Length: 482
Image (cartoon, rainbow, N blue to C red; front, side):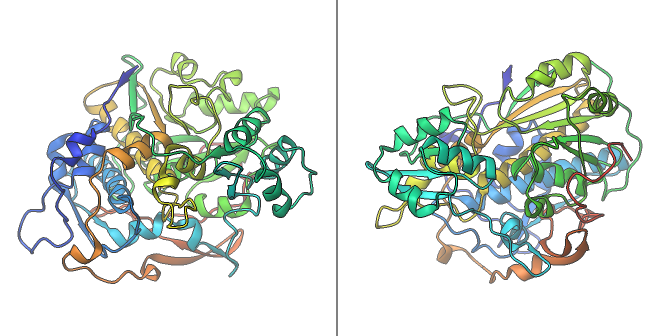
């Protein structure tokens, strides 16, 4: 495994990176340091960074940590990767990238802006959240029914126990004991910890060896991934944001789920734009044969299940690349790819608690805090999409062969904590304009009813303004490529 180094704290903190949203007309924009660091981690040509600029409101995603700078950098890197591929497939020059910070801020909380038939979804269930323990705090995640059932069972509570009963039990137990009992039961609870000094790579990349990738012909600038076939084996936010972005750019994205592990309709209504969705039981021979037929002509397989969860089905990255050395295989986990927690389940909210973000953002009363967005999820999603786009270009211009790309929410968290210079205070920014998220919201009809949704933040000259299709109902599409 060849690790691309994560941007170091020293490199990012040498001097404050300039704000690029207020450069006078006609003057070149200075390079945004987090964008440059993300682009370098993805192996992008440094000379293309001169194509990147920002505009729009800057007083967005307020936090004690540089969330705004992380968010815009991940979208900028993804936009530049799309522009690079667009230039290759259209035969033109690399389009200018202009990222609207209002669009970024709105997209980073897309699940909060979503309405379905006028109804706002509930993003966190009653059993999910911060709870006082005998010696501190713990964060639980029980949005899915099976996770709630496991959490209550781990604490010897009745399956119908409510939040008040959960709070009473947690208040009598040490936080780490709750954490380990939950882990042993397959439930999700993490003790709120101080800021971790551990630094995980932002992305790890390994080439599979020389192999000829499936040819891609010409494509329009607004659909640089047209004809690219993506198998989407992801759930919740980060992975689906990545594949939603690839679908925006023209990829044929087919999400595959087990019929025994349903997805929440509201979650799919948010992240299913541009994609199709089907259910296959890989333990059933007929469904497995269908899957193998899809895999035979896929270009990308994105996975975001707990490490090892797909190995029994022969879908470990090494197994996939042994059969198809031309594949691009991005893989996402929660806690990083080394260390005692590398195989544990996790979500953005739990990683925020476990790496010290919740403690860093705590209020004056000591109650743990949160980021203004599920920024680890969304940011990692755009980085994954960017890495796929870069790999598609690299395969055909510089380095033929497949790629195994590894990301983690912990890697994005450690970049936020240790690799990005803190944001300038709101009052110190020049030329700030007010932020009104309605400018970046749209409405469309779907199989779920009328949706209000965030528009995509990807911004380059000639790029797409919206998805080609709304989300269909989860699991109802035919298991076939277009």
